[in-house]
Image 1 (cartoon, each protein chain N blue to C red):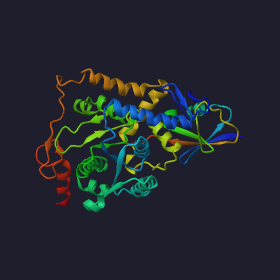
Image 2: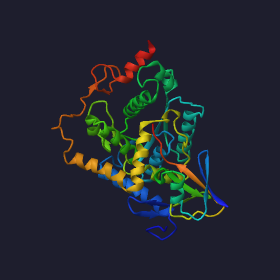
Image 3: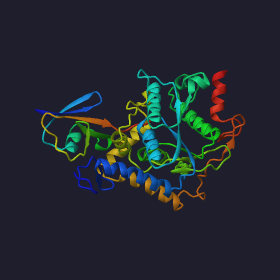
Image 4: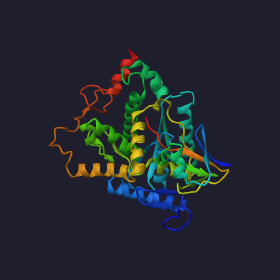
Length: 309
Length: 64
């Protein structure tokens, strides 16, 4: 197969776009498209200070690399979760996040959960009822809390995450089969800072397939954590991704169409406030000042109190 | 001789002469879920697999 632009040997074929590209044109195409999405969804501008949530995985490192190539002012945020799982998962993730930052001379902010809160995420999960023994729920909530906190404290204009289209489509699929109206209303490429204490969030990779991000990191020679989080075995999100990939194999473009037609339908009012599913009302946490869905203290602060008892 | 496909700790032997896409189908791996490299270079799934070569498959799905 040949590159559409230069007839050199293609390294990737994106069937949903009917587009095959060589290494050189692919590595140009990804930042060009990212810039298009940043502009289209009004994510941020070159005047903004951007905090990139970096896990050491392919998506977040690719995102940071792309934003740097596009000339944005960025810093990275790594959150150490203290997950070992027999493969030193968190240590390896941190090593690779640091390695990337150092090789590009970029500023990486590191927050260690065990150092800051006295316990690892799996240890905390064992002490709480949240997640029924699996740490994923505690982990997700804690990471969201810390990302927002650091972005506020360090006065970043926007927090960006490496969610790709497969991530978004899997979440959309899960929320659709359960008719989670509130979550469907909130799922979008940009979440505005529409409450005191909340930082604007954006997902610049939300229209790229996961396979394209893996290809980008490999072709850019960026070393990333290949091993999965030990706790992700059997995760629903992975199951949904497999189902969607089966559909994609038979019908190229199905995933992209699922996500884009959802965004279009929402824009056209399918999920308008006239339906009975209204956006979640937000309150301010009495303790940390971050937004919370319930009055009083936020779930994160309540969790810290409960494990201290 | 055959073609060796390696996916994490799993190894598969496939007859040479078929496309990568057909080979993936044969070993029940979704083409959307992997990238393939030959001698370190990424290849597209229309490539014909050659006798004696080793193709490394890289899983691209993550989550949790």
